[in-house]
Length: 228
Image 1 (cartoon, rainbow, N blue to C red):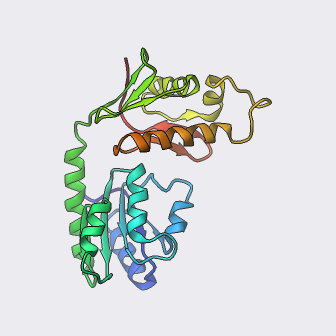
Image 2: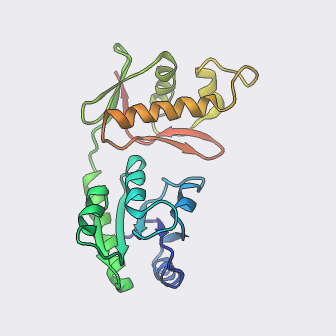
């Protein structure tokens, strides 16, 4: 029960080379990032089915990287690290890791840990609580009941995502729903609107923010969304 795609974030070149090879031989598509900033600059950093993260990284610290990933993804996340500190396990788990393995560790143990996390994540997400669009109050309701106020533009965008039923909505379609055309749209106005909406969702609820970009195409609402 290994994931289809996996991001391996670790700056130990020899370790990542052989671990990636070990997982690829078992059918996993692995992308390796030696710097956490390289992952975050990737065209789709939150689209992987699984993450294996070291804590001692160039760029964003491993614990902070886990927190960032947890804002955008609820897939399995395994820490494999040689960091020595009294509270390192607690820091990793509280940041959002599903499991922690201390280096040195055998590749088979890493694969077994990935399988174990993948089973738990799959069971937990089998019957997810949907997000809801409350049209009457112009609010987006998170699975935990938190309510996010929507401006008229926000409401138009969320209506698009509800109609798409999980599919990607093109940038042109979203611009049209915003009442913008290519000629009168300010540069990056759609990106800015999506960014502000994401930030309001993050402040309102610890639930995963389901608004995700699809590079070169548009955006999607990667969660069940019901319009009321």
